Length: 582
Image 1 (cartoon, one colour):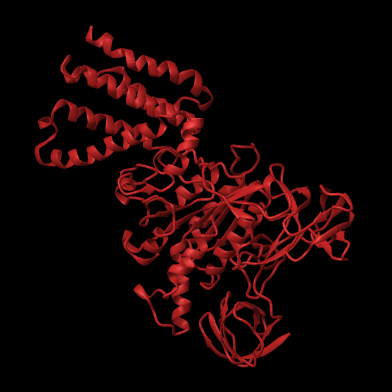
Image 2 (spheres, one colour):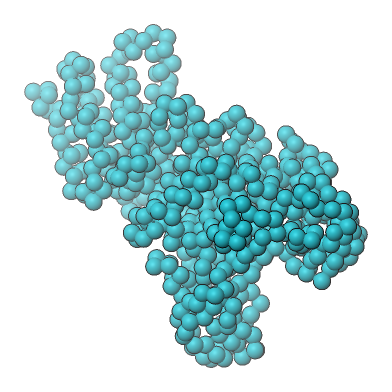
């Protein structure tokens, strides 16, 4: 045990003397209350400590204690369904202890020590196991089987293992070396969990949101950023992704967000039904709440705690989606702590190492072959989707730009679309995805060889519409040629009936990929039909075709009727030209 004394206090940064032997990133307890902190600078026996709780009332001379270990996340059965703060304190447990406001120095075990889990072994006595091997499982929730992994540093033959009910602290197996394995693991949050091998991305993360799945997809194991100004729908977009994305596990980090937004998440998620299982969505979700009125220093830790939990479930062979809302608030915490340390500021006051910190975070995403002797039978992924809140919607600011260098998909939110009630308010002219080439084979095999070609045609129509709008503003729509008028009208259909999606509608909230494919085909088929009538009938008659109204209603076709409805619907759209021309 290393014990020193407080020598200086500057907001969340506390200086202490007499801390010989302590290391950067070691966890400390500060003052009589034992506030949680982390060492961020060492000069001889003097250290600077980042305190994760309010430092009001601390006095110079109070003790600072450390056992010489870094901040460790507790990993094991019981994580799912929990709501933690940035330093993995269980908020519901602490509320029962201290009321609705967290008392300084309050603590609680991240994992329930009293609950007993029914452990089922998958290895036998005499089998050799090593780091990353699965030795058994417990049914954590009705939807998720929690696989018990051999911790780092343990290897040998199984000497004892038995099915039964255990707490997370009790050993479920013993090796011939005398080492015991329990269901609980501890892991330093700033160190990525090891893997056997990263593998190429080639499977899309299906979100059920047409703007993402068709135009700007992200792969399982990929990364995306969602930048946008205030009120453009970042939080709502991430909540929709958390609910509908085809990930096995969801980790949602509210990092420095407004309390009322996080309250919506905390109150809504426990009552949401998981569309995949019919069970509560919380059965496969971990929430980390670190709102803007909580200590600023804990924001940085919340990001690393969340990604560590995500990697842990990835190592079991699950696909994990991590939502970080918002990385800008994390960067602001870095800026404040850097200023307290009197470091040389970089661009806009952010520390010079901002780019490397952002890169380190996003690089922990990936699709991998999991560590273990049976590695080829177990693959998992972590997909990271980070919201960015640039001041004034300025995408040229440092957090957005440094995130752009790393992320594979850019979903730029547009305040003008949001104010016109177009949701998701993703600007299709500025957004992009770098994963299209990697996904081409998957689209061809599972949807159709023409999927990406139809996507390209829709985008071209929208891009031409943007060019024509500038002409219309000068001379009016009536001065355009009939082909240009038709393009503007079909572009409006793409915007209003395909890209716009109602998150509160029981059918339109989620759109399967096959239905998205058919909707694209229907729009382009009708477009070709209308083009074939140009010059043969008056344009006003083309506008009276029933297909326009039918296209506006196709998104409300029940998803289970996709295969029975759309093939005949598309055939009807293609033959209508003959009837009109006749």
